Each structure stands twice: as C-alpha cells, then as structure tokens.
Length: 412
Image (cartoon, rainbow, N blue to C red; front, side, top):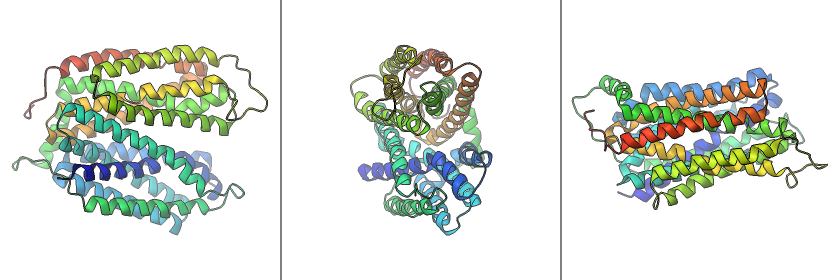
C-alpha cells in the first residue's frame, strides 16, 4: 500500500476545495458587478455553501464506509468539476448559486472521507494527529492561494467584466488532475459487519452522542469554532472600524491571520512528535489569551500616518492576526484525539458529527461577535472571546481525563 500516494491524493483534494470554499467573499464582490445583483441577494451564496455541508454530512456520513472513501471523494470532485465548467459556459447568478451548492454538498463527502482515511493509513495516535494537522495546514495554504488565483483573472479597469469566470477552467483542470490521481490511488476500505444495515449505521452515529467522551469533544469543538469564527469573520471589520484602516488594507492585513493558521498547523505536526497533545493545546490557548490581553489595549486611540499603506499600518494590525499561530493546532488536535479513540469503522460517522457541530459553532460565534460589535465596540467583542476560551480550557481537561481511559470499544 503506497501511503505517500494516498497522502498526496488527500492533500490535493483538500487544496482544491480550500480555494473554492473560501472564494465566496471574492465571488460575492464579482457577481454584484458582473450580474448586477443586490448585496442582499449576493449574501445568499454563503448559505448555499454552508447549509449543504451540514445537511449532507448529517445524512450521509454514516453511509460513506459502505460506499467507500475513494469512491465518495471521486464523486465529490467530479460534481465540482462539472460545476466549474458550467460557470464560464453559462454565466449567470443562478450558476453561481449552483456552484456553491455543489461545492458545499461535495465538501461534506470530502471532509468525512479525508478524516476517516487518515485513520486507515496511520499506526498511532501521534501519527494521526501529525498528519491531520499537516492536511489542515495545507488547506490553509489553499485558502491563501485562492486569493491570488482569483485576482489574476480579474480586470480592475472593468469591474463588470466576466473575465474572472475564466479561473474556473483552471479549477476544473485541477479537479480533473485530482480525479485521475484518486482513480489511480487505492484507498483501503473499512471492514464492515455484513449483517449491519445502512439504517443501523445511521442510528449508530446518533448513539455516539451517548458516549461521555463524544459529548465532551462536541462541546470542545463547538467552543473552539465559536472562538475561531468570531475572530476570523470579524477581523476585517475590526481593522476597518476600530483601527480605521481602508477597506482594501483591512482585508490584506487579515491574510496574516490565514497565513498564521497555515503555519501553526504545519508546525504543530512537528511539535506533536515531541510534546503531548494536551500540553500543546493548553500552551496554545494560554498563548492566545496572553496575546489578546497584550494587543487589544494597543488598538485604542490609534493615530494613523498619512497616507496609511501596507508598510506603515499600526503595529497592532500586524500583531493581532498572529493569534492564528496559537489557534491553529487546537481543532485538528482534538479532532484527531476523538477519532483515534474510536474504532476505524466509526470514524466516518464521528466526522459527520464534527462537521455538523462545527457548522453550528461557526454560525453562533459569528453572530455573537457581530451583535456585540454592533451594540458595544470591537474591543469588547474580541475581549468576549475570552469566555469560550476559558470554557474550552475546562472542557479539554474533561476530554483529557476521558481520553486517558483508553479507546472506545467497537460495540460501544
């Protein structure tokens, strides 16, 4: 079995979806100009992407071991390739909605399959955590690449130009390459009980919620995503309204956050070879708290140079996004801890629950931060992030205690 080839296939799959999933902000901007749709209508694209991820994960995650992870990923990539081809051939707002609906639905298949496949090609909990962090770090590199890839096809002189749609030929080509790699890479299947039905698999996924270890993990994952999305989603607005930076510069400096997440996850894969997961996540959370308490006071009464640009922005604008370095390892590590405690046949079902509750956490975090931002101010909104951070420290202590009791029996 060529594990290196399997890892390459998983990395390329995640890279392609990173570009597409995180292009929604750029595409919203472009469809407003190219198709003359309102901001309210364009904002629906986020829902066309996120809702299918949660729904498809919940309904199909427990069934994917029967379908096969290799086949599931090939179906997801093929769906997205066809949707990408449709974009330049049928330029319209409805095509854009169809694209993100397809990307969201397919990503549900992809994430469950990728997470579950990691358990099949690693031999220890340390290897599992290291590879999962590396793959998630590679995902963030895809996010960063996406900004530059889309920008290369835009026409700044004619905002309404459809030239940006040509990027989808490149993305379709990446999907085709990915599809060929997946087709030629035999990914092992999970041995299943021959007498067990798909309905029993779905019920088994719901029964996971009765396990104390799973419940504590779900709370931990929910709190983490509340924290990450609360900061990540509102950081451009924070830069603009609190630091008084121009819109374009606010977005450019937010890319430091994405770069920090990528670097943090890649480094965590190396650090975990020498440090326990529980020690690392505690150090990360305490580092986040320290950075917030040190940097947020620097964001008050900022005096900007004239003119302000990328190289003379306030120091806080460069330092605060570095919180991503500490934030980055937490989610992949606790996901790995949970999956490695379960039998491999239950990894797909557990990943489905991870995706569902992560989506709920992301929505909750963004809404809470947005409401606090609107009613008070940006500093208060970000200081409020210390609440889920503190609760996360407590839930991770409980997760550590339950995890030390050993793997969950296959019949649990």
